[in-house]
Length: 348
Image 1 (cartoon, rainbow, N blue to C red):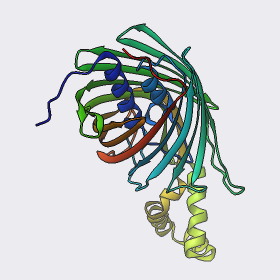
Image 2 (cartoon, rainbow, N blue to C red):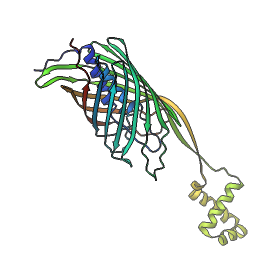
Image 3 (cartoon, helix red, strand yellow):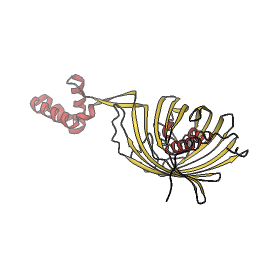
Image 4 (cartoon, helix red, strand yellow):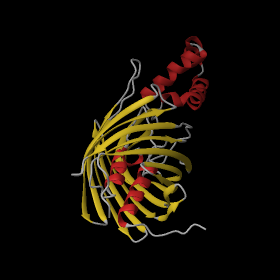
């Protein structure tokens, strides 16, 4: 029988941050809008997870992850795609850290895109309350015939994690900017259930998590402008009549049978009037709830390795004015992390 125990302050923080990192292990590379933000594989969360264990030495971490479905703010837009992420991070015992990450997506060309670099600082407010500040830069891999526009190229991030017995409460804010800008706010509540010294496994953790993502995004609306009954509209209809029935017949009816001409004009408008409709495109930057997520990750700690299996269920929410049909979706993830310490961990 497995005996579960509440997490210690440092171990709980490690698990909570690692869970958040895995929950975010999904990206969407979209030709119209690319925003990594809190819904992406954010190295900030991995750095947090390592630093929060209160190591008194510097460390290098190498990771490789797989996700079965790639989403953007919890939405997959009906596109079936999978992806891989790999990266390397270094953090110094003073709290400074840096990272480089790369991503591969099954549904884009070129498949490798993008590369993300990060610089940041980790700090503690109390032994159960930590925070991070970081800057991310995105570098895109574009082919010669790729006309994609990636308006988001930078992000500034701040996150905090507070342990409350078996629970951990986490929050993150990201400001994304470039040619456009956006905001992301995510809140998480995590339960930590731990079994230690389980055979060859040093520590086994199950951490069910509920999270809510809020953010801003540009919403584009197309408004039809219907033609009014004026001379210009009648002239345009007359040109359509010339194309459909012949100029000779139309002019004959105009001169010799005005009633038949007006009836033909009416039928032409009913049948082809859509060709005369003009469309006005407007955009607005709106803020609101974008997604709810329920996740069930399992962690296995063996020496310097961490292996994670996770399942995530997304309930996307349309922003105000966003005309999208959004269905719940899910994905599974597998991640392996290898930590290389540069000095032995101090005994407690």
